Length: 154
Image 1 (cartoon, rainbow, N blue to C red):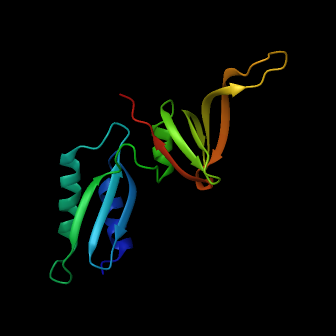
Image 2 (image 1 turned 30 degrees about the vertical axis):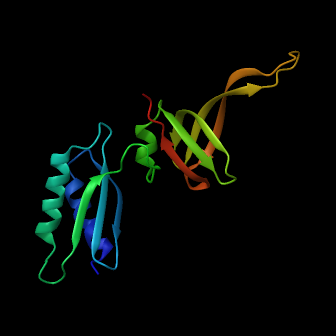
C-alpha cells in the first residue's frame, strides 16, 4: 500500500506556488489514491491533470501499481478543511449539528475553528402576539458539527 504521507507531501510540493489548497488525500489497501484539491474560484481540469502527472512522475509503478484519481472537492459536498469555510463566507450553507438539527443560512464569519451562520427564523418578541422573522446568528465549531456544506442556488 502506498503511504498516504508520501502522496500528501507530493501534493503539498505541487501546491507550493499555487492558490489551490489540499482538501483530502485518501489511500486504500487496494492501492487506490484519491486526491481532492480546491480553489476559491473553482478547480480547472487542466490543473487536475497536471497534478496527476506530477504525482505519477514521483511514484514508481514498478514498485507498486496504483489507481490515481485527482479532482475537486465538489460543490454540495461537506466541508473538510477551514479554507473551504473561508471561501464560502457570504454564501448560503447548511449545517447539521451534533444533535441532528439543521440550520440553513448565510455563512457570516470564520475565526479559527469557530464560524457563525445567520439564519432567518421566527423569534418571539415581547409585546407581539405572533413570532416575527428575524436574522439570528448561530455560533458553531468546525469540529463540533456533523457537517457544513454549500447550498447550491438555482
